Length: 334
Image (tube, rainbow, N blue to C red; front, top):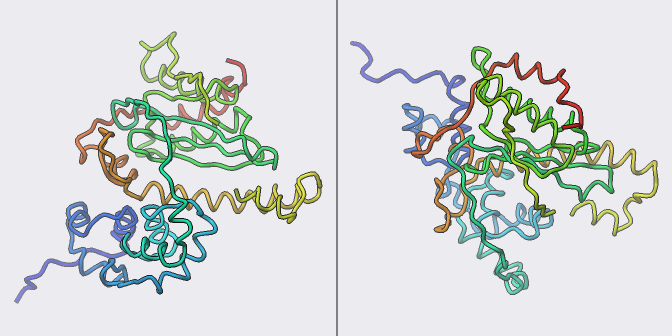
């Protein structure tokens, strides 16, 4: 008598996809629709348990909260729920986190005040309509430079990089080209956004010129146009704590070279990677003032058609992207 049940798919093939959707906090039904497989039996065998199954309370999350609070002193309940899930594999409802704050940190509850933010309107046509890049110069006095690229429609962080500097156009362009090469990369085809945007610093000339050149190679009708937005306005704590506590002296060349140039960069790279993974796989707090799809940024970016939005990615060849690495656009002159 033949087996009346459908065969189970090989776990080693679908496990990466399951973990990807699990990190994006998708429900069981959403994952089943995405994978079209018997996910309930599979994720139980993998030891992945939901909030009710873990059954945490204020006391069981105390150790994890003790480690998280010094690192994220201003994190609210919604963000802490995501941090517990991504960094400690703890799935807990927001009510338990709020109860923890009331029990162990009541003084911080009283200090919590609404931020006085100035609301501005931002418009984007769809996914990959725009890449926004920016750098943080606050760590330069420690010999560290942070640079970030974001796809604003989905909120997906494309890269977060820490190095000795964030002023080198060649280094900044390498971040963009490495990201573009990773998008798609099927049959030597890769994808890039329609436009890029940055402040008018010379460190961004490489991205502006290279992206424009790639777009012109793809569409000769764009000859003579710049496919980059220059934003004229700019808005520009762990390291500060180390200096004020006299753990190290930034005026000491030996400490600066050993601590910041070696230990800090390695630590911050791991921290930035973990933060990027957590943000890209955490559903944003719903805002009635935003006319954007609601969901985890990584899911929105990878499957925009499931949210009824357009994808404006431009296809190009990996060979064309690699050619930019040796082109004159690496120069800091525009």
